[in-house]
Structures are given as structure tokens and as C-alpha cells.
Image (cartoon, rainbow, N blue to C red):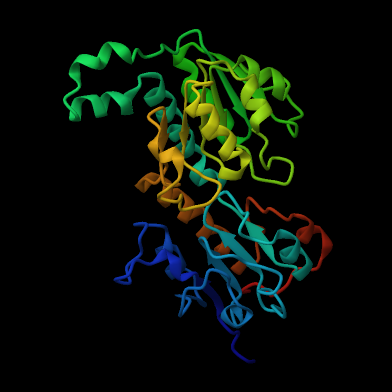
Length: 340
């Protein structure tokens, strides 16, 4: 009887720092070593878009930021699974994965608490004018502190667009603040305790803190546009911990410049990295983060373990959790083969 070939996993090279070490700390790669007949390695080179030649010979991929397109998957008859390191998957052509019979998994368990904590961090920093007060202190402008009064959160309204895992976690963390909770999610078909589900227009008009944590889709592209920004209260804050293009960034910049809203906390942008000349960088009423505010040891350990477990599950002939394109499971069209 011929020996079964190993289940081979390739990791995109953007996980590595220039010195060749993993740039995210402990992400669960040691889990692979406990599985017989499973081998893993980093791809030999980094490409922004993975080529078909790079993925040939692999049963599974662990992908960070590299794009996977229909061309990438051309002829990928061995590949069984792409495990996306994170919860967003706008860099992966889902339809192409489905057509090729390749499972796509994400890691909501790993990001739920860290991203929710990040949203609360921005909420509190904005409400207390933390960044401005830091600048006053550093610049010797101590006497100007009375010009920057903070805003208490008790009794205010917290509105969240996207009441999924992260959205519900945000409400849970905010519970001690004694705020009113509003949510908008057209895909939600059941009540959420303590949250009033309302229309998007109502949410925007009544929120003092408007948090975006929905997925970027054709329906949500520029969901917060110039007209919807005009609906916001002048003392309201906008927080985005999802994807940049959900907000019309030019319209937001105008609203912030003209002080039509109180401020914003942005971890994501239309184009990343944000250009050094972008006018957002000159505004004092916005807190900016380089799509990294939730980057903690807790976050990456959780994401890594979840992604690695998905790969191990497929290698072991099991169905992984958090499959994006579940139609592949039902179609009997799955590519590749399990370890056993």
C-alpha cells in the first residue's frame, strides 16, 4: 500500500518580519506539529496577489493580506481550504473559491473581544477629548484645557451598525456605562436583549456614538455618505473599526472640518496606508490608527488558533467552524482531500 502524501499547508509570507521571524507573536503554529502527516511552510516569496504557481502542491493556505483571485485558483485541484487570518475577507474572491470547491474560513472568535474593546477605547478617548488633552500637555498649552470639555457617556445613545458577534460584544462591554443601545442589522432576524433594533436613518439621527462594525459589501460601500452624515447630531462621534470604504472619506473629512459632527475615531481608511498629504491627518477632532488598534497578543493568539484549527479540521476530515461559503459543503464539489 502506497504511503499517503502529507497534507501540505502554505502560509503567505507577509506573516514574517524582514528578519524572518513571525511578526505577530504566538499564533498557534505549534498546533500543526502535533498532527501526523501534516507539513507546513511559508511561501518562498511575497506577492500582493497570489499566483497559481505559488499555491500548486498545497492542500491548505493560511492567508494574511495577499489577495486570492480567480486566476490564483485556476487549476487548483489539490487545494481544500483557505483559512483567512482575520474576520474580513474582501481580499479573497469568494465566488472563485466556491467555483473551485475550496472552503474559505474566517476567525470571528479571535477578533470578537479585541475589536469590541478597540471600539470602546475610541469611544472613551473621544468622549474625554484624550488626544487633544495629550497635545495640550505636550505643547505647554495647559491654560487651554477649559476649551476642551469632555462629554459624559451615561444616558447617551450608542448606535452600532452590524449587530453580529462584534456588535453584540460592544453592547456587552458598554453595559456598565448606562447608555441607550440602538442597533441596525438587516440580516438579524431575532431580538437582542437590551438593544433596540431600528432603521438605519433612526440609528444615525439618534446616536451620540455611532460605531461601524459591519462587513464591506456592495451594499455597505459608502453606506455612511454625505447625506447620512448630515443626519448625525452635531455633538455625535463616528467610529469605524470595520472597513474604510463603508464611509465616504471625503464627505467625512468635510463634516469634520466644518465641525458638523463632534469627531471621529478611525482605524480604517478608503486607501491604506493613508497618504501623508491626506487632510484627515491635520484635523484635531479625529483619532487615527493604522488598521491596527486591536493588535494585541490576545487578538493574534485567538485569530491564529482559530485559523490553524480550521486547517487541522480539514486535514483530519472534519468540517471546520466559521465557513464563509457553506454552499461548498452542500454541493459535494469540495476540492482536494483530507489527511485520512
